[in-house]
Length: 399
Image 1 (cartoon, rainbow, N blue to C red):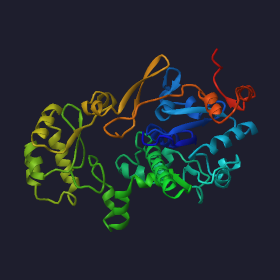
Image 2 (cartoon, one colour; image 1 turned 180 degrees about the vertical axis):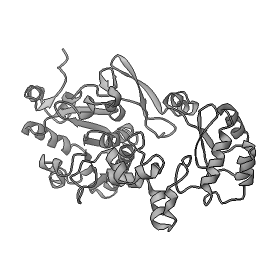
Image 3 (cartoon, rainbow, N blue to C red; image 1 turned 60 degrees about the horizontal axis):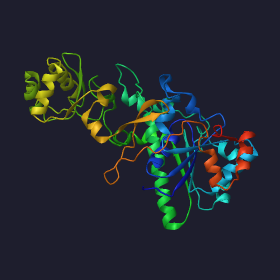
Image 4 (cartoon, rainbow, N blue to C red; image 1 turned 60 degrees about the vertical axis):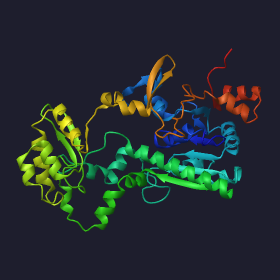
């Protein structure tokens, strides 16, 4: 395991922070999720009200391979347990709004006083400081403010949000990347690091290529008003999505114009072989759309594959679940959750040819409170007192 013997204490909720901690937990870190007494927010809310085995789909999506302890951080006994937990850790993560963690007694200076070489990683909506620091940071709002909706949409349909929390998930990967770098520095220099990530910066980072071209290239900015089949304003045609005669959809990337014209056996495309497919991308994309519309999907697929053109079917989630490459990659993993089965999106990387296993899912609030407190040196009687006074949350003690 790459991060074996690294302990990470996560005070994170919602998606960006928990997903970042999950990446690190998959790689072998001992990630301890600190939840409020009533449980993390994502235990009680899930998209489409999905529950598997009594556990919300949102929680299952971002909290595997973590142990759970429930602490009341407004209770002095709960804060004392948190301080002892931090003293045992290599990394502390949180994604409260700026200032909240500090008001609870756990800002950068306080953490350094507990452990001088601590890595403190925080994730915010817009940054820890600045004019928007106190505004609510949420994926949809960042998609709007960062330009992502504008570049995804077009004048025909207006700004278009991505159909998932892409900024949260990318922000999680960037936060995990920052923590991994800080761990290397700690090994090399023995120094702690203050790692700061934000959803706004993650949303902009997703758009590196178009932003650089837009802000640096001095192009005709009316190019944003592209023909509706095209996927972006900065690629030449036919880069986009097209409908077949049997109402299926295919994505067609940039291909040799002659090969595409011959594949589709289309006179209009043959006449457009020598045009600049960026300068004339709208009429070229329209011609491709007309040509594709003459063919049923299976016929089109055979033609494209025979000439090794760059294309792909537009698949829905049921198609994805049965895709042979997805199965080979083991990116979808079925796991038991109480008496039901959930399909999780597995860790995306392989290490030495292996996919990291799902080791544990904390299906109950504070499922590991007793064992974690025992590791910190608490006696059994004291642990039960903390649970009884609700400074700590834990399931009922087994008989």
